[in-house]
Length: 100
Figure 1 (cartoon, rainbow, N blue to C red):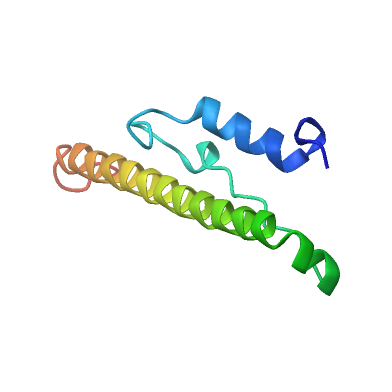
Figure 2: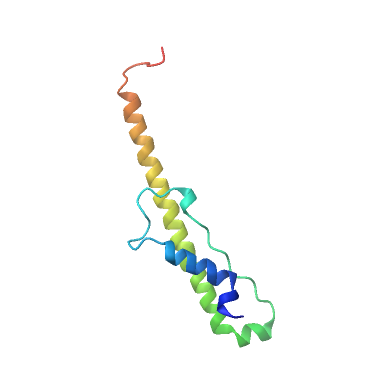
C-alpha cells in the first residue's frame, strides 16, 4: 500500500505535526487527546510472514501512540484537578453558607 494512501500514515503525520515539542501542552483537555487507531488484525499467515517487519512496526507505533494518548489524558486530568481545587478555594473564600 503506498504511504500517501494509508489512512494510518495520514493520522500519524497529523499527530506528529500537531504534537508539542516538549510533550503535552499546558492546559490540555480531554478533547485535545486523540486515541490512536489500533492496527488491523492480520489473520492470513502468508501476509503475516511476508510483512512481518512492517506489521511489527505498526504495532510498535500504536503502542507508542497509546502511551502518548494516556499521558495526554493524565495531563488533562491534572489540569481539571487544579481548576477544581482553585474553584474550591474561591468558594471557601465566601465564608460559611454563601447560599443562605
